[in-house]
Amino acid sequence: MKNVLVVSNFKAGRKRAIKYKKAVISFLIKNSNKFKFISVDEISNMDISDYDTIVAMGGDGTINSVLPYVYNTDKVLGIIPCGTANLLAARLKISNSIKKAIAVLKNGNVKTIDAMKINGELGILRLGLGFDSDIICKTPQSLKNKFGYFSYFVAGCLFALRLKKKKYRLVINSSEEIKTNASCIIVANAPNMWQNVVSVAHKSKLDDELLDVFILKTKNPIVFFFELVRIILKIKVNNSRAEYLKAKSINIQNKWCYAHIDGEKRRYNEDININVEQKSIKVLAK
Image (cartoon, rainbow, N blue to C red; front, top):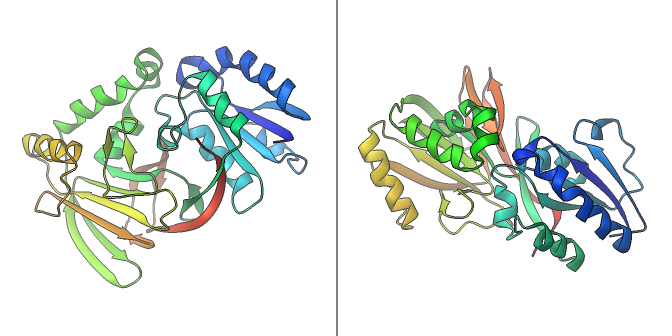
């Protein structure tokens, strides 16, 4: 780690990036040849050719913004978790503690992981439709600023009381067709939720070169919470309520829908095509 570009979202996670900036500067003065701080909105106008490490100082949305600049390159992604969820950091065992997060940067342990491409757009965590999209897209920013990650838990409980089912047609690996009525579909590279408490996949790894697909088939809140308990207890078996798949590519037939990619709201007016991008991101991890 010689030349470091720090891409910050100072609004994320109750503005933790502002609190952590001094500690990061102190570290970089001692451990880099040169460094520069920019806001997440400035990276598209930056010449990043001189930088070997790009540190995302924010949440999962900030990491998502940085992905195109490290994707399939020798540049390394560093993470200072400052967001609401920090799911990729949790998956990589990077602590929300600024001292421990800086220690990961200092140790310099590089891991190469998969990413995913959704209609040409890069993602690192997941695409969520239905219930999952509602939680991410409809939880007010003011609530997230006040209660942090707990706001997603509250929103999840509320939206679970009004689940709706929709018809979906999925094509797995360009060959296997699945027609289903579902209240939620998640296609994930990193399927962990609520830090690492819940995972909607079985034996998933960030470098397994596979996407994990979770299909929730119920709109009954009681049945949903029963299935959630099974997920928490790691009892993940295909049944009439839920289905678990692994794939390298997925096509979801679609006319229009709201969704999210790594916590960022999207609207699609065409089919959704998702592919795994194998071993395409170098990241500093514990």
